Length: 274
Ligand code: NAP
Image (spheres, rainbow, N blue to C red):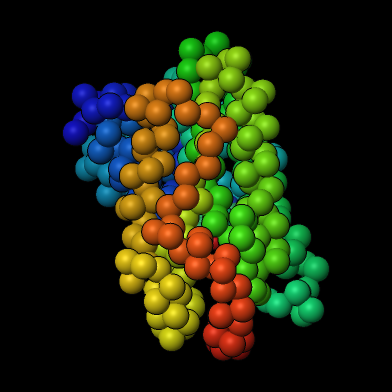
């Protein structure tokens, strides 16, 4: 679609852009005409995604290495994005995330800290740095999209750390929406169910099959199906939506809520396998 698309030439920063949902978001935003800053812990993966977006070398799209859990790293990355494109991003989609699954009774404290520092503090650091940059240049509008998880709403066995981090992301998003509205910056979240990515590829197929059976459509989601919703929230097609969470679960949420113990046996298998 190129620069004539609905995001015509705007700069979009995507964290976790080197893999899974983040990668699909980069592809989708580029197709809508955005100039994409692909940011990931692994600069090599980010570079590979950038190359896939367009055969044209930078400056159309660019790749950046970042550790979202480190304020210095995030601030430096946002400054480099602004240097490269000559403007701060007006779209930011925070996809960087990790899991360290274990039952509560066995959960090591460093695994709790690690998940919180990437998923929640990382989302805060990126949001703050990007919002500061937008406000500093007097940007007329901006859109920040946080990738949360339906697990943050309903909980999940073996994921106390992950669920806590993703609940936090929703609270963060709502507060940001209230504070940043007066600057024309919207903030929303997508809450995916179970999506086929490298994150879920570690889960044994038997367990995946049980999750898929809980979904009325009988399958896991694809990263592109989450990316489509992120692109909608990033664009002016959602101009009067802020502070909202959009569930992308194909009704998995209801089943997880009503049958919370259904998967405990499966997750025991899963935690043995990982
Ligand atoms: P993924 O394929 O593992 O992608 C996550 C990306 O984030 C990876 O490239 C990862 O790099 C990067 N990352 C991790 N820690 C980072 C850090 N400190 N700084 C910068 N980048 C970092 O997983 P995904 O499934 O696409 O997940 C994307 C987002 O969706 C996550 O926030 C996840 O919690 C959320 N989500 C996923 C699902 C699902 O079913 N897949 C469901 C709900 C929500 P490394 O590979 O080096 O760690």
